[in-house]
Length: 173
Image (cartoon, rainbow, N blue to C red; front, side, top):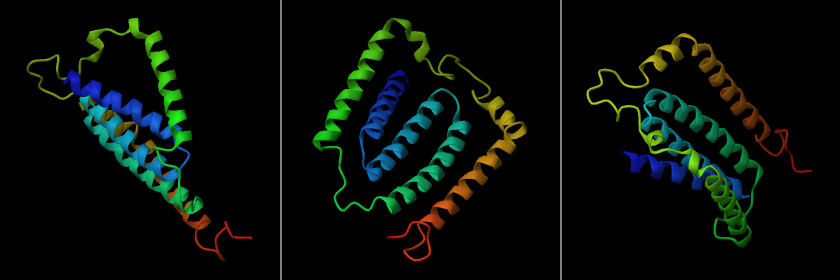
């Protein structure tokens, strides 16, 4: 389980570097979906299965809005991909920064911090996020409804902006 968590964290860092270094919105939106999936995998490994499910659904809704907006605004016939020279320079630069920061904090990490929630108990009766589910429904319910409302409103705003050449707010002048 520790190797799986290390692999998920490594994929999360590389995915964030891919999102930050790519100027094309198509590949950046794809990278955001991959990063959201890997981040939710890390949360599942640490015992937050319900939280990761809710977070993944919210992220997918947000990424759908971002992708629709970026695909409507950036109509590039040949977008820059991850193999182009400028993108590779940014990737190397970001990985160098991540490596330097990781080397700076290397001695602050301990092996016990990589243990997951249910790995340290032999016969657990409840999962690690049971209390979090009750708290999310009791105190966090209005916030979940507000987040869903904001995502719906954002979707309508993006659809209104990109509705067409003659009716939308973004017109060819």
